[in-house]
Image (spheres, rainbow, N blue to C red):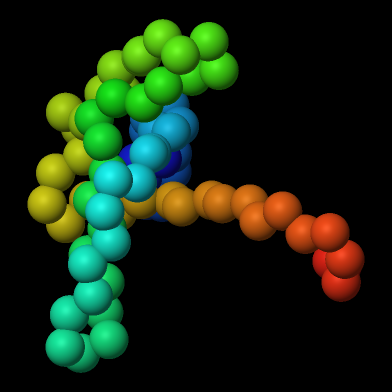
Length: 71
């Protein structure tokens, strides 16, 4: 989600679909995301990327499925 200068959320969640991960020689990665993503019924919805510009501050949240060892 996009954050303003005060750290407040100013956008709806963007559901990213990764389309590529490219490592560089310094151990950093560039992650490419699609502007659209398929939902459960295989139709496409467009995510609004227009508010996301270079140097935007964003909140990233992700989940990892664990079968054991989760706290």
